[in-house]
Length: 153
Image 1 (cartoon, rainbow, N blue to C red):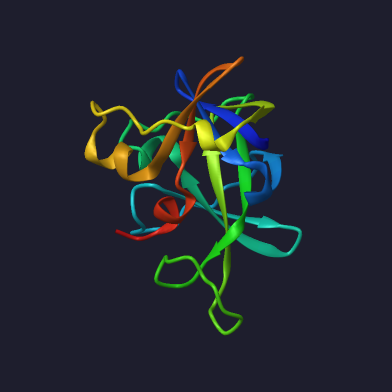
Image 2 (image 1 turned 60 degrees about the vertical axis):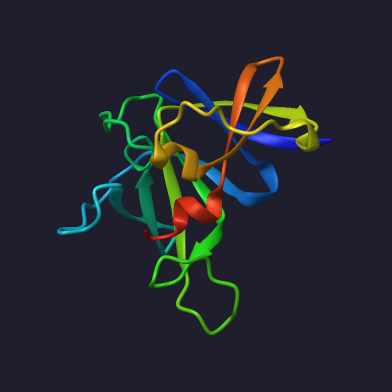
């Protein structure tokens, strides 16, 4: 059994393997970055470390939503190097990344091997960033492909 941290973006329930999540925090003081990609919401200073915040809704091809009281940032254990690709080695310039989400859900246990392919009616942007769908007690859980989310393309 795998555990998934779940969160909402719009009406959809998304999930990430809990082992890929460093922490979940409330939204605070996101500093915009001029001339950045539309899905880059900005930067935060998290205990002395700079974290790049991606607006997950925009990254998935949806319209961005304003930050609400229920909004949170999911800080990922994965890092990205300057080119946006996931960094594997120690020599790469590493940046922490966070996902801006509308609301946090529960930790859900499910068998990852039972994940089905994403639906065929998705947009190209959505299909690229999704790795599968799981049926859980909480409803349909859409699993994200973190490597693609963090890639710059």
